[in-house]
Length: 531
Image (cartoon, rainbow, N blue to C red; front, side):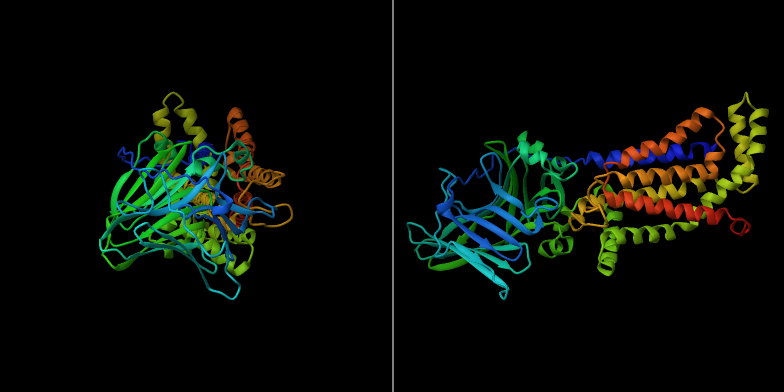
């Protein structure tokens, strides 16, 4: 077995496979139940029925016809790099709808499902603002039924927070009990408008959109828009739980706060709209009494530590792929370094040094193994000549030679097996963590989460890789001219791969290559070999 001859080819194939896996961004299929369960409310009344809410982090538009949030802008996040406009998460337009709806249905619920009517709430003010010296803002809207029952829907905002408390207070002044159910749902047009799709700054943005839910039995599960469009809908009964709509960096989610069961459902509404929501179990309000029904709505960036406090497992909406168990601690370490340094680029450089220091014993074993294998090339050549007509015997003799000289060929593969999962984990961190969105580094690198606009870093990466290949002992042992040409071409292929990868990931690889060059020279010195 000629291990050194296949080392770089193995590396190339392994990285290619991992990158292919990352680019696919496959969503998980689930067991489903078909149902027509839906509340197909689309708010169309504009302007005169709207109220406006501004906090230090949110700008919202609430439609008084139903009390739904039909627009939401995140003030701390720009729509695009170098843009002055805030990022709009929820919106309601002629060709695209993304709304957060909620209401009370059932026998005595004001949101009628039979004729698609919504209660028209009223409010004393049209504009609410959370002042700098205020910690909390209440936005109450009111509706009175024909029987005199008073329904107050109160939105509660807190300074610096993206979770909104939505409380229904029901005042039953009648002599009969009221029976109703609460619901919260998110609806979004499945197909993005052409102008919105072309302006998207996010790699594989379309594939990142979809729905997700959490139940008492299943902490986190994704569900495709395609499945909803095919009417393969969810109908799950659970206690607690939550529902969400996902996209890269940002999430909208409803979290019911009740003691009974909830039904989690999806449906396909008119105009190519996907819906995911929850419906509570039956709620009874006795005569001449009042009751409050609570829920929480998250509208904001995927800030993991904040989301984890809002609802269990809500932080899992940050998609780190199948290597999440590596990506999560890696992100925590990266954020710790950022809090200390104050620059994500320098944090990536420092984490590269840390990773290289941790894997140094393996790197040392790898290079020493390759050097010792190179010194055995004359004997290997002799074995190949002696048993040139018996490949099986040739492999057996070479392995006996390795065993006699106490050389383990696997040592050449261990560093790549360990470093590649770290590499891919960092890839997921860079493309999935909102903290690195639009994060600048130096000079022309003004967004570490997107590709280098001038492709300077990928070219530097290719040059460092070519230098490592030329100076390593492995490349010197390749005797086949065709194989040698293939090996020389691998850095070019890798450079092509890295042209579209996040600049932060390319930076990580460049620094790693430079450290490898230093380690290689250090290990190849006589002092290290003797030791």
